[in-house]
Length: 205
Ligand SMILES: C[S@@+](CC[C@H](N)C(=O)[O-])C[C@H]1O[C@@H](n2cnc3c(N)ncnc32)[C@H](O)[C@@H]1O
Image (tube, rainbow, N blue to C red; front, side, top):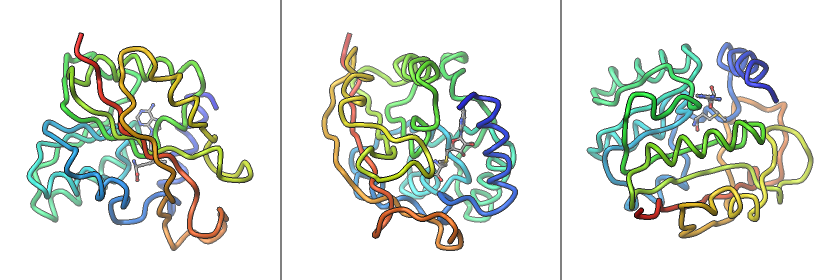
């Protein structure tokens, strides 16, 4: 998928009901909350439910997404809920350009949208913005989910290979993703799409 196609596709999703936009944080991030330290970046934050969950726990949180409508909705939720999270329109492939650093980056469904080249660029950018000893918590579609509908599948080995240089893989767990119940035309396996939930630590230099 080229970047341009994906941007148009995401704009169309946010003009209606996006399948991933459940209105609540993904349970895998809730379960891993104790691993999260400030400052936190939610990369490809969508309408901000995961970022806002961590903001409500008292973390300093920034969410970025390249779709303005997603960021508008995330900012509106933060204001409604009286939370101080900051949301910015930014392409994740430009992360690090402002010298920003985070103790934790969360990625809920971003890595799996990228082409191979963009994935490599994104991971190089993550290496710049995650502090040494900091963590990346990542949820992506698993190759154990049958079919080709929805985002591209990622194998456990691809995750090990992609993060082989400068990262320690703390865990990779097979989980089920939560979906927006209002979107009924997309069918994944019973119980929700199979996904990897990976915890990666940036090695000290
Ligand atoms: C599957 S959605 C997940 C959204 C959100 N993390 C969630 O869990 O609800 C992927 C998100 O990544 C965003 N995205 C895709 N490519 C991006 C890029 N290059 N830079 C920033 N955001 C991007 C999309 O706009 C979309 O909001």
